[in-house]
Length: 478
Image 1 (tube, rainbow, N blue to C red):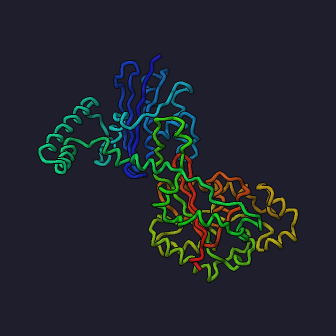
Image 2 (image 1 turned 180 degrees about the horizontal axis):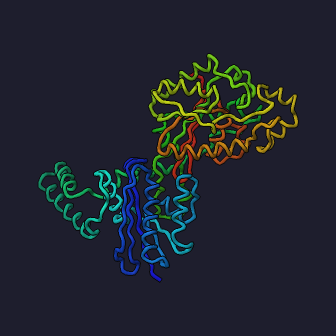
Image 3 (image 1 turned 30 degrees about the vertical axis):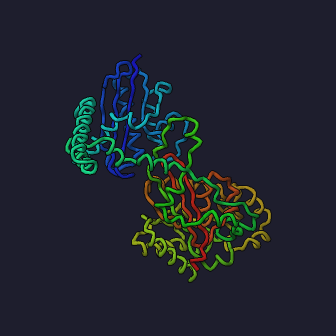
């Protein structure tokens, strides 16, 4: 039985951005290059390009010998760990690519190994050649052999050293750069421009999955109506607004230390830029200060004058930060009105997403918590005890809301990969976004406070990991 080595890589100049992949099939016994493949992909993410490189390498190996065994070597920790079955594949954009790669050869005939980037120059070079060809509007075609290109690298380095010695370190560095550019693009330099740097990867690997909610005595329902008293610990934990996502994404990312410490020599997951959801609860309505159930099945109130003022101040704050790239809102009146005020200040359009609507509270709509308990005590107790329980009159259970929000999350994370989007929604959906990101149980919905017009944020990475940032002090909005 023949044995092949597949080396594959992919990169995106911007994430997402113009991207390409490279793959090479080697004879495992001799090291001979058997097949080279590369392709410009247009604008996709770095992780998509890596998976496409893997697929191309596996398919090329299968064409050579469908009965062969294959050892895959890649510098993407994410792809290697996911394809090896050690990391879960949660991101909806990665699942079909991984499934397709797993079907090329029968199970057990493909093994995976992570290698440093410096050891993956051949595939990296092919990926960059494909991106360069795409930038020129051309198709990729094989150029010099790897050995010839390595020799050219050595000649370029020697020439740069010679000129540096004659001109001094400062001038020599500039001359060396000009020589390298005239010879060809240095693959390592191109890689650092087309994928996150090692430092950026390390920053993106610091996970803050710290608890951002604190248990409090239950004082009423968790949804639109009654929030629990603000825990003092939470105030210290959320010192800045989540809307400053350029900083927050680096500071509030996943520490996947448990995955890396156990295996010395592993590189950090190459996750790329996350899809960042800045979650804004709508401003006050006439029902908000009365703490009445106000879901998707009630009177659909508009904002009060206080709520409109809150929305204006949020809009001003977000405009100063300048990080929001799109605005998506629940279809209910109060969220569309809040989103419209913010979007007008940011110069953006509002997209309506049905999945962001509030829970339907059935017969409890318009009632206070006390009134609901007086009229429907057994139903309310069941609802407080189980996420599967529905409000009286056929309302929506928290379990159903959770499933809806999870589907909406996956849809939006794919649509806005690498971007920062403002989601204008309600108490239950926003708390559910946070709960799912933290892996918290359903009862945690009753242990989070979410003030009117408050901001939270969740960043979703390509491997399914998430980080959460909360900011609930809205005193500056009144």
